[in-house]
Every structure is written in C-alpha cells, then in structure tokens.
Length: 452
Image (cartoon, rainbow, N blue to C red; front, side):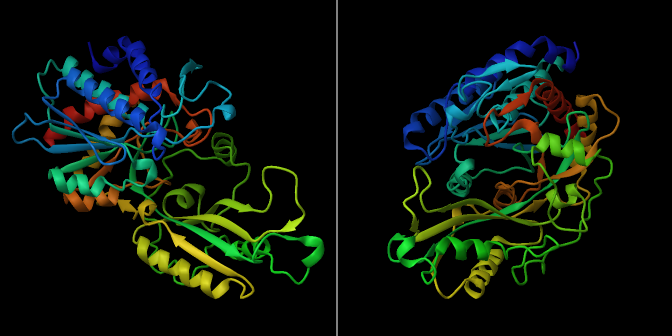
C-alpha cells in the first residue's frame, strides 16, 4: 500500500481525530479557557505517544502549555523541528452559520469548526503524514531525527516561546513551520517567506467627558473626527504607506509568482474582499507576500451598543496593524509610526500610542537556494499529484524569525490552509482533500530529506 492509499483508507480516522480535537475550545488569552488549553495539550501529547515518540512532554508556561516531542533515532540524518500551535482564536457562537464553533461538522468535503485550519488541521496532517511514513515504509522510526514543538500562545503573541527554547535547549538543523496558507487547492506552492507585524493602539482624547453636541458642537474638539482624519492620511493616492522612511529597507520582489494562476474574479470570490486596492504597480500576490501594508483593524468611539446620547465623545480609539517584509525590523517601523503620529495629529487633541511588543514580530525569508526547498517541492508534487509546484509567500506573521535566531537554523514553511478557510472568522473550515494531500506530502518529505 502506497502512502496515498494508506491515507485514503484512514480518511475517516483523520476526520474523527480532528473533530475530537476541535471540541476542546483551546482559546488563548481567556482565563476561563485555561483548562481547555491544558486538555488540548494533553490530547496532542497522547496522540504523539500513540504514534511512537519515545519522549513527549507538556511544558507549562504560565499561560497556554506547549507540547514537545522528540524521536531522534537516525544517526547522520538531519534533525528537524516541526513548529505549530494548538491555541485558537475566540469565536462568537451566534455568528457561525454552518455549525457552532466547537461542535464540528463535515459538509461538502470540509471540516467546520474553530481551529479546523488554523492550526489543528495542519498538525493533524503532520500526525497522519508521520503515520503514513512509518506504515508504508515499514519503518520502526522516522527517516529523520524529528522534534515537535506545538505551543499554546501563538494567537496572543508567543510571549513564552523564547523562554521555552532557552530553558529546554532545543536544537535542530531545520525548522518546518506549519501555520501557513497555500494559494489554491489545485495549484500547490512552496512558501518562501512570512511577513512580520507591528500592532499598535491609538487613543485620542478630546473633551474631558462626553458632552451634549447641542451645547458644544462646532468649537469642541472631536476625537473621532481627528482620529479619522489622521487615519485617512496613512496612505497616499497610490496606496503607499506615508510613514517617513517606511520603504527605506523594503526590497523589490525577488520571487516570481507567475507559476500560480491568478484572476481578479477568483481572488475576490475566495477572499471575500469585494474590491482590490493596495500599492499601485504591483500584482496582488506581490502586494500580499512581498510588499508591506498598513491596516486599521478596529475603530471605536461614541455610543456603539444602544441609542445615541447625542454627545461628542471624550475618546476615540483605533487598532493599527502594519505588515512588514524583509529587511524591515519591528522596532524601526514602530518608531516611524510614533514619529508620524506625533507630526500629523491635530494639536487640538491629546493622544496615547501604545505599540504592543508581544504581538510584534519580524518578517522572515527562507535562505535563497536552500536544498530543502527543492526537496519540499518534489514532495509536494508527489503528495498533491501534480507536475508543477509554484513559489509563494505568506501574508500573515508568526515567530519564524524568532525560531531561526534562537535555533540558528533555517526555517521552511508548509501548511494546508487556504484563503477561503476563514481563519479568525466565523465558519472556519479545512478542506479534507488538502489535509490528505498535506499528509502525503509530509510522508514524502521525511523520506526524501535524508538524501539532501
């Protein structure tokens, strides 16, 4: 039996395993869900022991626990650390149409539920890729020295990850980072880069208290108006970010994405974004993966949850997210933002800008020409049953740069998510066929990598 046959024969087991895990609401950063995070970690630890890992540990952090496993029984072969996370984003039950977020269901070839794609489904693909590797190769241990680190705090900034790596002395020759997207279900591509992120909250203060607009409207400073005026200057008419010096360290795109199919209609349908904007002069894939971006994620002022009091608000607030690319650094961009706000905001209002260090991350790019890239591309061609494997980036962020620095090892990316999987949104789901193709890819990758 070849790996694809093995995985097809175990399709229902893979689905059942993922659904069982989704039922544990391992929401990060919510104290009421701390027991669920512990149960989630222990669930994964049990699966790793069942597969055969001789060393499996649950590492406490003071927050979401991490799971670590090690199976190093291949002298002379590379040591690979698989990184992912088992914590998930919070979900509002009333906004889910397909199923309640932690009551998973299968519909039209997809598993619905919070974490189905980000990132429990990706870890389940790893579990079954390793099972296939062992079963179809009639092996008693992986062909590589394998380590697994699945943290429980990625969604809130991985604040304990660096300490865990230092405390436990984790080492590897290569990191396989599995918290990423593919471009298209029918067109696999190797991800070569991950954008960074700088997150900030801006609060603008006007009157000392909310004041009846009929008494002060006109001469009173309105923080909502001033905040909107400021945010409207964040981009110029070409879609470029206006922070002085912002593009000084931005390189022109060096990867070619033309092997991937693209049309405006397909992108708009799958991303549910309604229209296309961004930096002029670049394709949508380049804007997503090779160019930086700045977004406003929340905007709050005045009476939101009930009838209006007809008052000028005392305070208005916005959350700003800046996605960075190599060679931009988080601390430099944060300082550019501080200077821009200070120079641009009206002197009629006061403000407070807070850059959130724990959810700021630097971008990362896999070293050019690293031999593992070609190995992964060949494994994807085998696992997905296609002759062409493109190249892409990832528009999101994560602790790839941290892992590379702490372990002094290159990072390679492989995930099974899609833009249409609705990460962080309602009705998150994962395509079952992609989970199977991902597992087949990983099986082939472990088999091929020792020969590199």
